[in-house]
Length: 224
Image: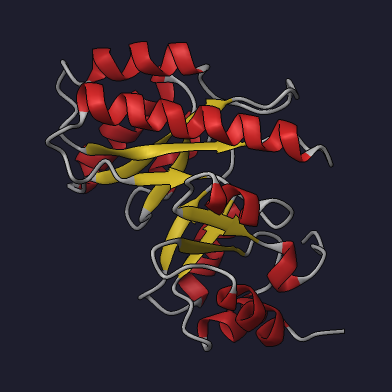
């Protein structure tokens, strides 16, 4: 069985230099994260607020922590002092809460708008139509402490590559439409986050420039 370091280096070789890798470290202990950090990785993704805050206090301060899970509004305040990017803005209520908490911390928080394209109802996010309407509205209002960097999504969990590709293409098309309609002069709107361990190579082919990979690096998760 390959070591975490071997897994990480193998994955890195398959990712183009213009695509960012988020090492999904959720449910993995700090010492496992340190092994990947020591290889040069600096972006790590977590999905539970308590787990993230504990790891933030244990690990080096130059780590860029990304929050990738469903975020409850009452827990936003615990991560806004240090979070680098929130991938999972899936409602207007959460967007408002992030802006409010960021103002208290005097920080501008980078976020991605989560888009629901998968066939599973268990996944969160705006529909593409809802997302366009939401973007149009919030850009005309005062949200000085939140910056929309792009969109995030997940494909249906399936072995049918055609379904996965079609859903990724919806995300890429939506990103392009948003860019052309609302962010033509905004270079900060630059992030398309989709693709995980099982489908990241397809995601990159379909235009993703940020992939979230966990089990292929750390092995099957041991829930802690």
